[in-house]
Image (cartoon, rainbow, N blue to C red; front, side):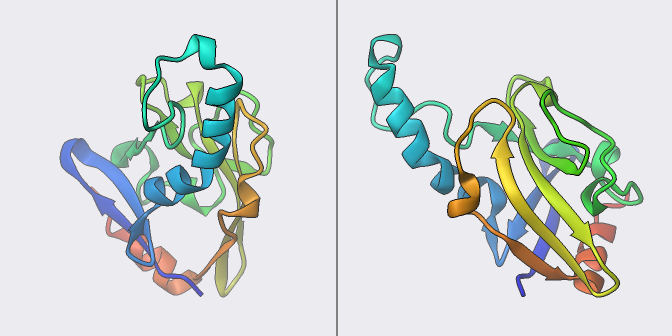
Length: 152
């Protein structure tokens, strides 16, 4: 099982850490090969640069919207995105400030003893993030204790 941390950071955002690594960094690593391929395919549209555009281009949510006591991170979303399925939760939103514009989605399954994140995807790309990202399984008591630390 993995360990999760929901950490309140500057401006009241919640950064998510899995086994001590920021979720955003895990996502960037998973998306990078797909973003590089897309950048090569669309080379005439992009300015040449070392790091491709798009990979990991997400922001965290404000704790007052998605933190404890909301059940957003327990599979009952308070925020939704374009092209989001009923069984998905938006984990990260767009950097533009309109979270649902560019979103990282996943399925959150909650049982009496565990919380499982799987089926990671971007709402606008068909990148197979599940091949390299997750699934993550957390102890429900540890998960809920970590989430409760986001209470205002």
